[in-house]
Length: 242
Image 1 (cartoon, rainbow, N blue to C red):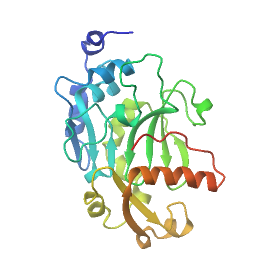
Image 2: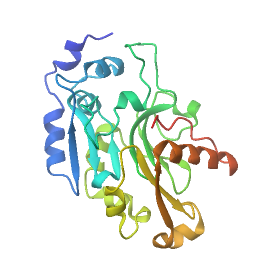
Image 3: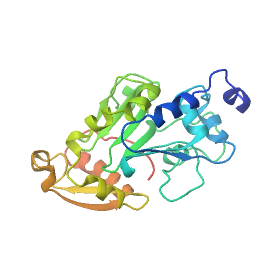
């Protein structure tokens, strides 16, 4: 086990580079503050250093809020202000005290959007968890297909990718006229349901004509798992605590 000092005191910390990327980001990107002194407990649990993008996000921030809350990237524990994302520790159910024998259930859930789409970082054996892609690479659970999609990039590359103009391109088929206002009106812990469902032909042909309503994120995630079972699709596995 590496001590906290070893994880924090690195020659080239990643946070200054990330802050620069966030300040020049495309669209609306809010960096939420973490707890005073940094989230050392989560850093110890992950055993990654502040020289990595993941370590810097967890130790130095309370996460990111993008596009008025459409997407939340999880970071370290925060003071708990309104609109703060839940912490990476909460979403992934870290043990109450550091336990080096603990591992994420299927993969490390690092971000989530209002539709129940989930970004996760593969562990060392994604195939055994039913996940596509290589170890240490990002994946996305798509609410319009109910399947995991491999992303050919690691966490650091994904983080700079998701704050760029490519985010809008990625979500182009999942946004409707007025999505900004509907997203901004959401209360903490809630997302948006769409009917007919996003994977239906009706929704994919005319997303603007669907009926949408706010709902608890736990309900949205659970519904996605239930639909996979009813449609005979592979279970998505752990989508993170909501």
